Image (cartoon, rainbow, N blue to C red; front, side, top):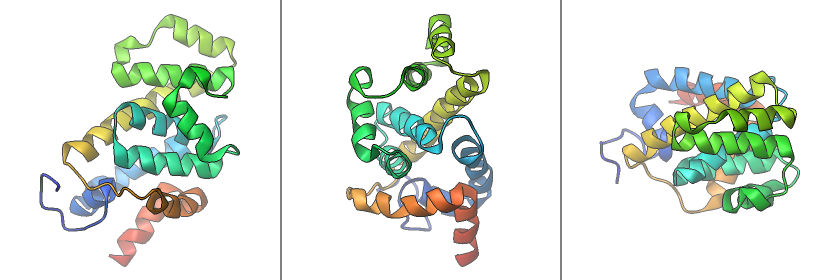
Length: 186
């Protein structure tokens, strides 16, 4: 049961956005830029970073959501998402993505845990300045989102199909467009 009385039975951050809609637009705009805007990292790779950080933070709602969105956009689907979650070192990802996920894991622990060696390894694997920047910002933002969702004890469905059902809309329209549509219907 949530720590505050929400005006919606929507799960996770969606219920919090209904409770305080003026925060929904800027937070969704940030996520839309980070996860959907043009980038040299694919949308699936960026969703995977968000899912990985959420898994490290043990945020069931955010992990389940972004795992489903990543799986919908990665050729290897949920198998890869789960392999990264379970053992990044053994997961079948390229050197660049592995290095970026390592940086994200360091950010998840503390921004000060990111080392020059990690940045050097990411660059040597082909990561650009923008990719390093966005990885750090995705990881930092998802730490905030995870703490927001779990700090208010929001509801997270157990059924993976609930999250997978939303994935096609996120893939097609992104976060901001979906929010605007949801607010028009409310």
